[in-house]
Image (tube, rainbow, N blue to C red; front, side, top):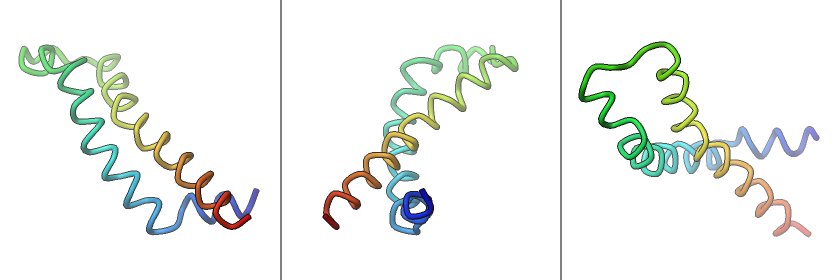
Length: 74
């Protein structure tokens, strides 16, 4: 498990995850919450949903990267 965390928090994986979060998360944010943001209708519940919308591609990218890196080592 320590190896997994070491890979997940490596600079390369974090940068890739942030890139995916910015691009994919931005698109999903616009699709799912853009109208509410433009109306100024952002309450605490929607803010949590917005954060999860951007966080999801980061998590997926990180898990995928770690699995690929571990498979490559085998």
